[in-house]
Image (cartoon, rainbow, N blue to C red; front, side, top):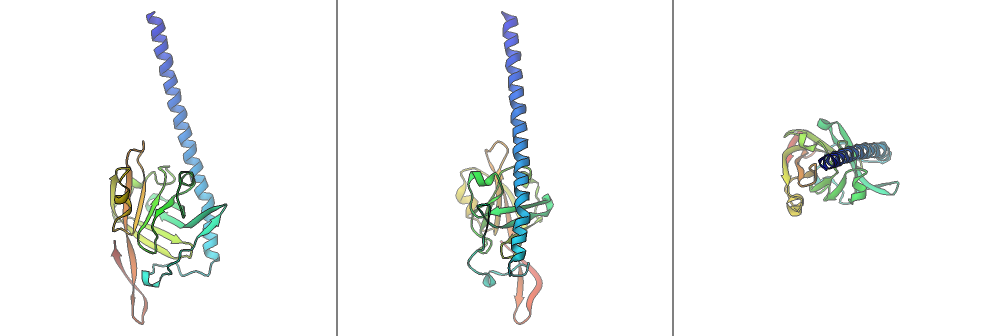
Length: 215
């Protein structure tokens, strides 16, 4: 009897181990697929931007920006631009609207806009999406390039962890850019808050090289 119970326990243990290995393998495949999906769209977004009669790739103050936001549709998905995070060696397209299916392809705008300094971008915690957000540190730079070729330069200010139901706290902040993803296991949200660097314009002198930081 004891031998049978022992064999049953060993069998169940092996099943759990095999199940865990299968889940790990599946997650790794999902991670690789998501990274490949994002990488496949990025060159096409860049090509679209370069084809536009766009503004120079520089920081523009809000008073010089158009209120409307350019988007590009590729393979049935609408994009607002792409995100560059040098400290994590990431360049990722950003879809204009989010849902769970779209998040499997690329980061998505959750709410807001770069033009109104309230952009919130969500992504899965795939290693080739936002899985390493927590490794950013204060002072790291983040760039967002919209479909008109305008580059917005941000500086990481705060990294915090929020409850999954803290929606108002996530979206209603004084920061120009917020990036967030789930922690592994999904219980919390890793949240990166960034201020925007804005080029000043001196009257009659065009773009000044001085940069001021703004939340």
